[in-house]
Length: 397
Image (cartoon, rainbow, N blue to C red):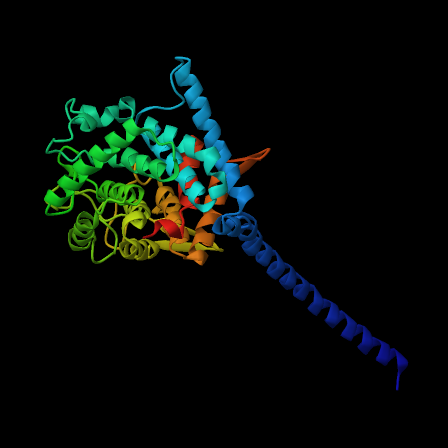
């Protein structure tokens, strides 16, 4: 055999192997790169999801301390006559959600009750201040709902401070007697109005009822019962029955965003209202909260381990607004955040993890010593996330 011929064949074989290895190496490199791109962000953004699910003390206390610092600073400014950190509708929401979140922290971590319960009461009391509801009082031509408890008007917006007061009363042994009297009167008024409503709807603005706000009314009534031992079964059953009969869109499973008190739709069924209503329903009726969560989670859209919630159900379209926040390809930032609460409290852990990854990605959590904040949402965003990330099974009755 010719040795030169053998060497030639060997060289050709080596060249063939080299030509084969080169595209194979490129292919392997592409696969590895795609794996890193698809897995690394979801791993990084989801690294704390299990901590929130478990109620990890360091994680929970970090955000709780951030909100406590906000309330302390707000008190300081008010005491010195320098105004407040935040007032108006956003102030109402911030103080209310801070109260709810810190109260939930007290329920899940009773050892911290002495530290946080007084802050819960102070935040709840501030959510009831007249300057927090100026926009509503103006809409009702000067009628202040808290001063007109015998009014035929619903004033459903007062459910937000009413729920905060109930949670404060539940966790704070030193809850003030004067606030308890106001709380009792407000709940009695809501109970009367809701039982008198054949649709289970109360108006927030003249001619406009928001099922989400009425879910907050039901939550406030339910928590009042837990704090005082008063039986509110009849009114809560009436409310839940009317939600199922008149307020949920059967095709999408979402609640109608806005209605009139006679039960006519003024807006489409939407995920932002449904998500917040599912959180509030968890205080009053676990089965109804599950139903609302089922409709909400049908709106989930997932990509590379991240989940977000589409605002409008199939067959409906619209723009973003104050409730939903800006819509990005139909996705609602607000609905995505709201969905964290029922996902955690009702035990949908995989859903919670995917949603949390998105919240982490867009919220930019930052630690400063032992305090945690989400940078992009401001104080109101932190208050909302504390409430949703600590929403627990003990609230889903």
